[in-house]
Length: 330
View 1 (tube, rainbow, N blue to C red):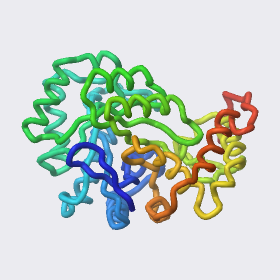
View 2: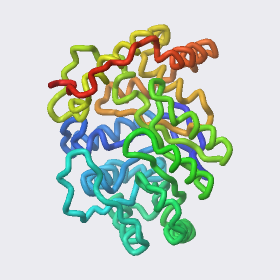
View 3: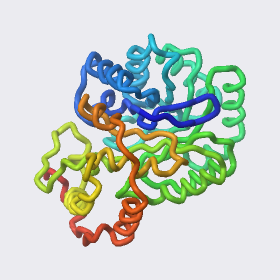
View 4: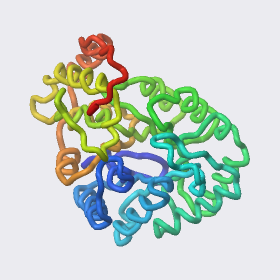
């Protein structure tokens, strides 16, 4: 495992562990014992950056992380998120967002609640979860974040863009108007925009990137086919079939990256070729992914990086699928 600087006094593993895969039910069901075991396996493999959110199963993600890493707290960097109203009753809306709540009184309570669930005095990186422009322009909110740093309750704060890919304007505005050491975004070999522009801005502002969905929701793990059937509790089941067919066709043109590593490993090295990226958050849902993604493999060559750029410019030589409505497993 290699390590990079995320923020002052925060060094992190190039591969991190986002615990939404084993605590939210979107990637299958895990018992608490199973989820804790995955955290420990990740730590044993050299992973030191662990990311969660208070909104992951209404705090359950934080509780599991806290239990799993309590005895190695001083050896890991813990990141969590805030900004959603966990008390909102209108939560039965599928994949739609719950409402935000970012007034200082609520955020102060959210910080104390997260620290308690995690079992820590100080959160290393506290991220504003999927903000809108109004949240980024809230001077009172950011004054509170500065106060929390000064009080030692957090070491640094950042912004996590989402919920889906995009949010270019919000990301640029956040980096250029606030002193952000870290910004979390979706970025991968198949979905390079708007990540490329956000990375360029990060180089200007000194903001390091935390990259999630580095394998394009599993597509770049290289084991999906046109006949893949996702389980009923896998959120990818609800995607249009065109996503699966077009993605599989694109991946078929990336075999040159598999010469001495897996496609999943190559996809991480592609992202980490930019030193503006501090760490990545692959979806880890089993010990096999930990072993694969934490393995020490070579960097991609300039020729390989150039070949990817050329393929991306040509949409990987794949004609876009026209079927945008039929679900993957309909």
